[in-house]
Image 1: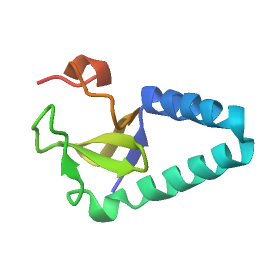
Image 2: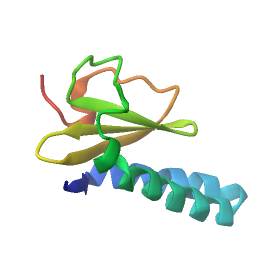
Image 3: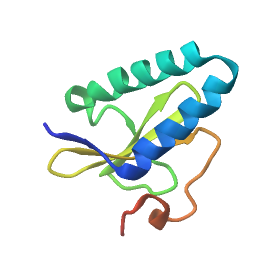
Image 4: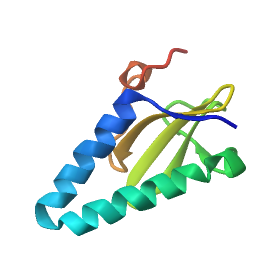
Length: 100
């Protein structure tokens, strides 16, 4: 199964890693490696992750990774849409580039 990261998701990972690196660069590197390893397992467990509560769509799910939400879409594979802090809610589907 194909796994694709959106430009937005990659930008968010970069920004989060930069933030973590301010205090401890080695922790940022470790966080990124662990994140990519966790996401790489999604093709084998794609439907085991929960549906994003704000959207309530079967095709939009999220992997909880520590304090972060990795939001992805199931459609001819897996598309990683965004990576957000767990306390951030999705106000609109346009925030992550999906339509109803």
